[in-house]
Image (cartoon, rainbow, N blue to C red; front, side, top):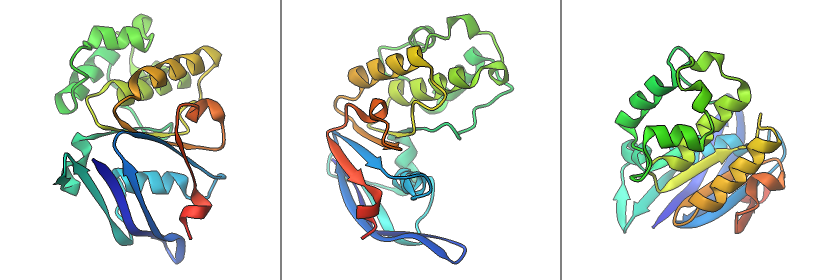
Length: 207
């Protein structure tokens, strides 16, 4: 099983963010993409997810030697980033019931257990718009780790987390990164990618 970028390029207006990026991620496998702010890490992660379309090149996903069409990639991928919006006008339990209609949780995890794992028990009947930034980030990360998917993409995952939240994230990473492809984008913060076996530097990928 693998996810490949083949001569990927992305252009915004007249500027190329990167060109001719080719790389194959093995499933399972754990990877960190490192680089400075503004280097194109988030853009690359969106291309890996198929959330963005490349200006040149193509993405390829194979699960058990079967090529997955781009429009079906979302069935295999979960993605967490601090800039991803949640449905703020929903209560947490309402949101999770809605979310799991489209992407189920792992088979042994109920919505109640999900809320406990994310330590959001006191907020199950609270509107998401009233969550703190840390609570929202825990919700995003829990959805990424605990949904039924083969590929987990994380962009600066410990953003907005306090010390307890970082320890919680690291515990989930240790527990749920096995047998999956996990790709983390990080500004060189080791707590975000401590479990990753492979390191990629975006400046090197560009060439």
